[in-house]
Image (cartoon, rainbow, N blue to C red; front, side, top):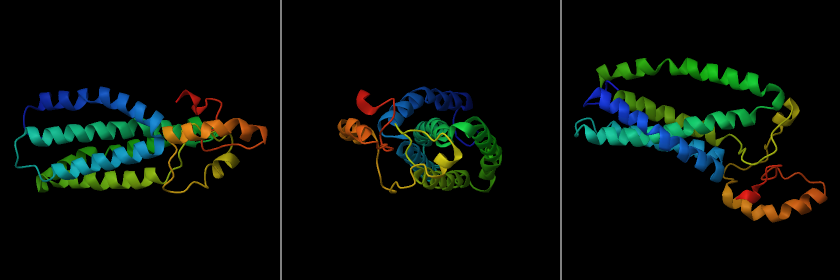
Length: 207
């Protein structure tokens, strides 16, 4: 916050208040677009906004603040969806321990935030470039994870090892995919097949 011009308290309020609509938008996107591309896309858009801010240091204080607010919207969406996706990727036997360990590791990286902000003494643009790089890494990491929307979650380590490994990188399993495959679900179950793409007890029919 100290790197943004203007009233520090007002800036903090504005960047905090955007979290409410961001969480609502993140929930809606995760339920309709899927966890994978919501998390990856939000991380990418947040990174792009941070990159743009690096070139707005000599502009009116409101311009970089507005761009940062947009970036905060997207990174909040990504933060929300990552926790949901993380819990769904771990098998039931290791879900609590795995989620807790992941949270600890992410917190260890989070302690570097003050040091990134302090790098502004070497150039006001430098922290935003670093955030841009972190956002790109987040996009690549999130895009390589399988889509967990409306899937039968893994129950054991063996299930987790083979969990949706046949998915293609550019696959999409959001709302339209669920709607287009729901009419085939009854037939697949009668034949003994398990539709991992969009087949769970909480089916896609509600979409």
